[in-house]
Length: 189
Image 1 (cartoon, one colour):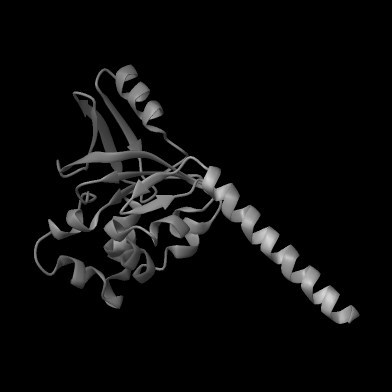
Image 2: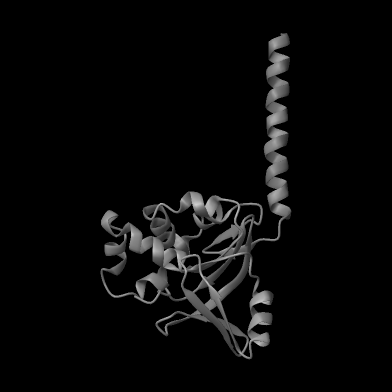
């Protein structure tokens, strides 16, 4: 009898704990990306895996062995290309990059989409205005991205002159922020 009461109490406590966690997530200010809410209390990887628009990016992060890095404390600013962005690359590019022998190149390309620190869209726009229309920053790969605006839209341009539009800004994460982009940017080769 006493064991049943202990067991019942443990079940109720577990239910309250799970319920409280779910309730806390419900109260968070989320942004929907790829049909899924992105929770500020979760890290970049925990959120990205739920976006149906970022399955290629998630597969690439896994193939590059960068999951643990993007789950770490950070903070990071990630310019996250959608599946449609990857589809713009020449045929066979993604498949080639995902091969084990191309892991280092894939890591470089993915790290080129990441800046150290948490750069909100407000921070980026302020830096662009202060920089007379452009702001260049270093990526984790050591390359440079240049941010600029066209109307109210923020773009990033890579070292090869390719530009990506930020389509969803300020997707806050526990360890940084994601800005969804419509094009894969690449470092100078």
